[in-house]
Length: 234
Length: 144
Image 1 (cartoon, rainbow over the protein chains, first blue to last red):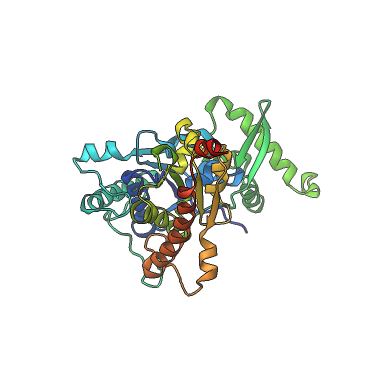
Image 2 (cartoon, chains in turn cyan, blue):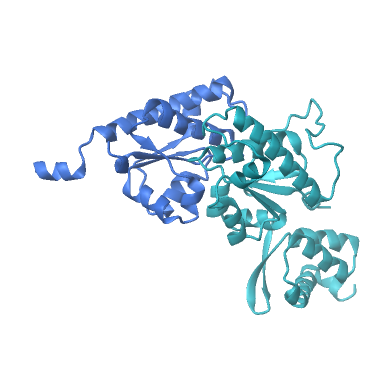
């Protein structure tokens, strides 16, 4: 039976080339992806997300997102908001450093001592937020225990494989993510329509006032998904 | 070369690809070591989000893109902003010519990855030098 991708937190780094804080956002994001929370986080290249298609946009609808920006132009947060959904959390590095009394790095190519200190503090903050979002508790925020044989290297989730279905809901053409996967799972388990809609809501941000329309549209789509002999009670 | 006519070096900086890191390092090698007086860069995400100043830079100045994967985000987004890259470099092409160079990872290039970035930067620097030696458009016109 197909299994829905594991619920993880998406990290979107601005990686701004012009600024030391852009490099800080990139290095810190990689630290969380590879060392602090390798099993709970995924990422996507921001320019690809911006220029991508449904598959890339679905990424930020499927995963709760943390945007990490190097300046107050907030490219990562704005891109997520514009093309997918409001990020679950947003960190603007100059604000974070000021709040913690940390110095900004001076080099955009190779982080200096101030940059390394900032990476450590910021990575721990992101890891805490990942834990909060997923509702998990780690004994400590430091590196997750990873088996020696399991070296984790950050990779992009481009072409994430999360399917997008277009439904007509309340007169509008709307994208709903993960629907075929959810249908396959429910078809096998024989769960109720209410449970189906609860699952759809887990993976899609649905405005409360549109819930009845979404419920009706997804249940109609599920009815079309079920093979004909079974619809007739066979 | 005047400030306004520096060659813009735009790498994809892909965060999930080791070649994205190679492209980014090559860009910094150009800006800081090889061509500090004739090159500059712009944040690709800012450009892609539609920032007017960033888009004007790649439209008005000679631009070179560096891409780390077939999605070619740097090239595609510069063109979408109205720019016409004078050259498009792919990290993979460096690998094809130097298959002995294996990049360690996206977060740590290792010696081979840094060597790959250096080779790429030197190839691009040659292109930058060509542009830098060309007289400004106005002076070309005045000699005709």
